[in-house]
Length: 231
Image (tube, rainbow, N blue to C red; front, top):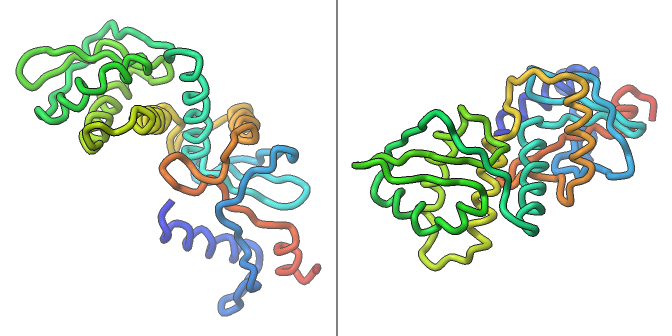
């Protein structure tokens, strides 16, 4: 979420909570960012805002969860855990997916072929600048295959030669999680929201996604009460 989006959301929330124009929130700030989801406190989803943010409550406040980055964090940790015991599940593509890449991008993929295999990714030469995507991780949808491999080639091209395997693993895991996660503007059922919130509580690091974006904005009960003169 960009700074402008956060500012806009904060303004809207302040208005919704009855803060008049020119009246500022307490010094502690109405909205707390980079909050870790409490594993001992279940969040109850109320619904979505703009099919992008999950609005949830518990006994001590209101949480606004970015559904994409929350799912991205969940999938990233699941992928990294799975890799400790073996390769990811893979799906072979029955329909050919062809992508054109630069020489440097193709070399980057070839250089990390062993790591790609651990993720269930298989690309083969198809002549000229083209590669055929033969297999991708099972967590990816078919329509995400081409974009994911192209983004992966871009990302791996930026790695210095001789970079540690662990760096490549984390980069690929983060990218696969991003492409496999639910997107902004995706309508979710309450069941899906509950699933995401439950899994988020199980993550080791629920504050930010693998790319550094905040997962949760929090409105503590004490601040809500102060702004309604109930403190």
